Picture 1 (cartoon, rainbow, N blue to C red):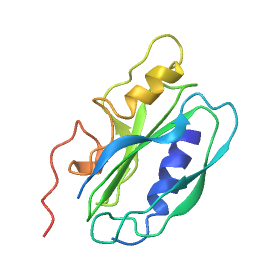
Picture 2: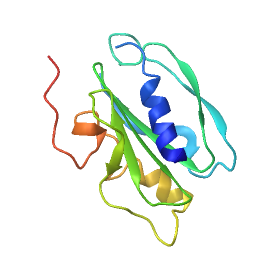
Picture 3: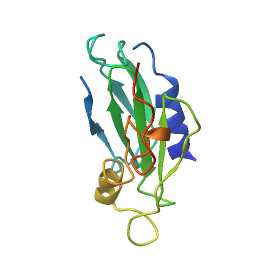
Picture 4: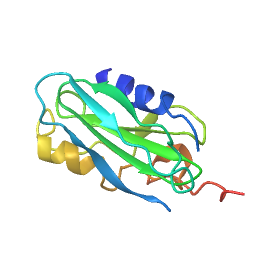
Length: 142
């Protein structure tokens, strides 16, 4: 549930309007042992979707990645504890859903697996339906 809450939080805090390379949020890599405050830094209005920087909280053990363009943003999140699924969502619409198949070893991810999962094959992709790399492409921006 923490993973879903984080994905909803970040997707819900999108405000405003060259592609941002998919990357984990610095520090939100699945290894942090307590809830942690992060700052998402906005780009210039012509280059990125998010035009106002904002702070958000991520639960312990959450790995989080973002893929952003000038017209949309996609978020991928997972937890290094519990279920081994990556959840994605996009400003292009739809619900936050499980992306791809469960990955990782053992009963839970290692922090390294969690951080890799959100930028790997099940990661965020702003050009795909629901922000999930394994989904079909969305219509191009007007």
